[in-house]
Length: 474
Ligand code: ADP
Image (tube, rainbow, N blue to C red):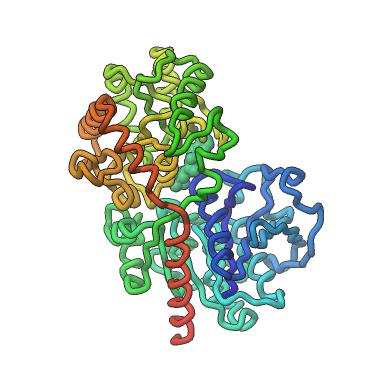
């Protein structure tokens, strides 16, 4: 099959969160199964062209834009059998991935530039696969104005996080040549790209089975639950895999000592090295909790903040790497100042440091309010780090509580979104950690889990077949 991905983030070129991990590794897994896969991504200002060998120029097109046209060029590289196409143009590219005042317009134009490129290619895709709101308008484009040019390619829309829908004023539709007819629940004059993609895709999917169920409810549906219910039959949930070549303690060049199930000594060395580097008290027996992610309420930072001091009272240490809401950044700065030597805070985005933290930690904290899939817990497994999570979304699908299931547990989890149940799960984790035989068994069990893309990529192929069938039937 010819499959055309488009996404705002693709690792290793541009990464803000989990979307990049998926768009940077699922295409490769599909290519390994014998499919022909391309990925379109904007050539963001943050992308290091020299480092990634991206040519200065690529084939160029004049893309319709409002009543005029704009020049877009498409330099590309091949990575592990996947054609990665960088979409470049003054009306699309900004310094950073998100946060420009014209995000709605430029991402709409990105979608149109992708549609133009696919329609002009001699190898037209069988399936057009758009990810999250940034690429969402590609779906109604392929289902509408580009249907003939694309010879009826099937469309799949994947929701990585329903909380972000990219709403804007409806005039963006005129700019990219889409009809204005409203889709529920758009208000008059308003555009909701995600709603439009859900309404017009042959298949809608999300990144875990549990989240696929949850988004049909008012609590998790972010206002789109009724629209999603109309697509219930075509709503798939496929759990994310991770790139096990990148996240592998046996070969990881970012960590100071390598290790594997056969010889775990390197993990203790990673811990000592990180403790030293971050100015923490050094000791291999000190339980170390890692936190990597956006410091926002989705990730449970509001229930984690009040229990931080209590975690430290158990004799544990906490290492935090992330950025987020200024309010929480300030609170954690204050905590780090108060608990020098036991709590370390690094505000920033640093992929190499993240790998050192995954490797050094004994436990990984992810008490999310909602979590479409979550990758932190899967990466932690790989590094023999035991996750402590709220049982929600993809976290519920991938982590089994080790007290509830002594023989098969893979972490510690709690249900009610509140500080007290989180603190209880943390205390249970520390107790297990202090039982050396139990901890060794638990750590080995999580390292044996297989969260490579293999199984999930096969499910994606089934889903693409279903999308093509749905398109033919339509
Ligand atoms: P999100 O909702 O942010 O997409 P995920 O758990 O799905 O959350 O994916 C987050 C990804 O981004 C993981 O690969 C995680 O290691 C990485 N990450 C998050 N914050 C940082 C950071 N500050 N520095 C480095 N990597 C980070």
